[in-house]
Image (cartoon, rainbow, N blue to C red; front, side, top):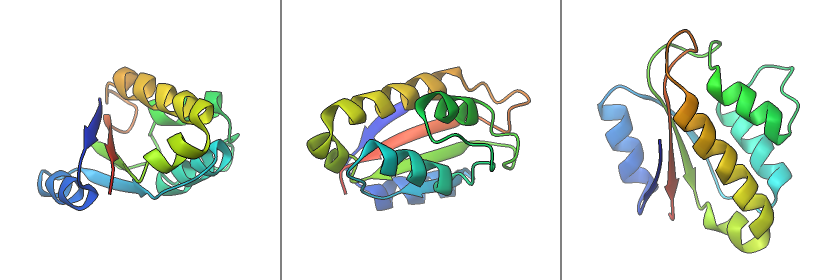
Length: 118
C-alpha cells in the first residue's frame, strides 16, 4: 500500500502504536540517494545492487527483517520530485508495485509506504 500523509511524525506514531516496524527515509535529491537511503533504512543485505530491480527484489522479500508489518515513511519525498522528476516517478513506481506485491507470507512481512510532506 502506498499512501500520502501530511505529517511524518503523526504517521510514525500511528504505525508504531499498531505495532508496525517503522523505517524512515529523509529528503533526498537524486534517484541514487533515494536508492541508498531506502537500502539503509530497511537494512538491505550486502547483495543489494542499488538499482530499481534490486530495490523491488528487496522490498518484496523482507525475510532478513522481523516478521510483521513494515512501514517505510518517506519524509520530504517532494524534494526528489522537484530535483529529479523522472527519477522520482521511477522510484515511486517501484515502491508502489512492491507494496502491492508484498503479501507477508514467508517474506518477512507486509510493506506499506507512506509519503509525507514534512
